[in-house]
Length: 138
Picture 1 (cartoon, rainbow, N blue to C red):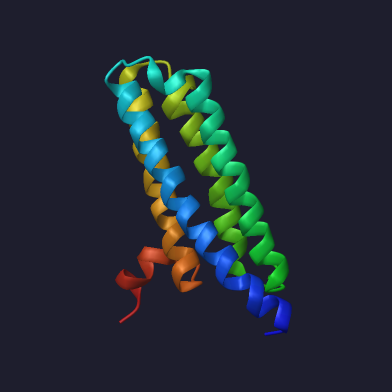
Picture 2 (spheres, helix red, strand yellow; picture 1 turned 120 degrees about the horizontal axis):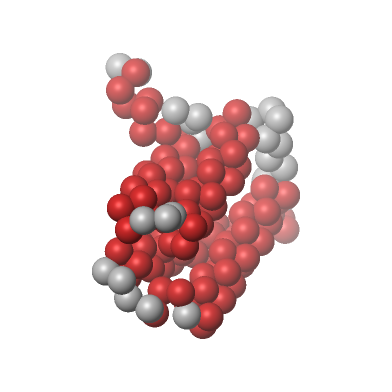
């Protein structure tokens, strides 16, 4: 690892991981609030806070991607993680706002949470199977 990479890598990695945790906790809290018919999850300050966290999270992720010279075309785990990120965004939108019924929003939120857990596992082990690797590999 080059000198500048060795300097920036720990800060970017810890920032990315901390923001993943914060983003997921905020999503879960908002989804529970929506399920309990609370108004606060959709207030502008909460929505903007979520967008800010996710923007800085993406910036840290892109920083790691560039710093480590990752290429989703050559690394299937990263390509799948990025595809799942898009799915998580769509499911989360339906879970928090676009779902037409309370039950539908709950199911979409649960699916979004499961997708993000799979993304964490994929990133952790750099394996496209993520948690599923435990089931199919001895």
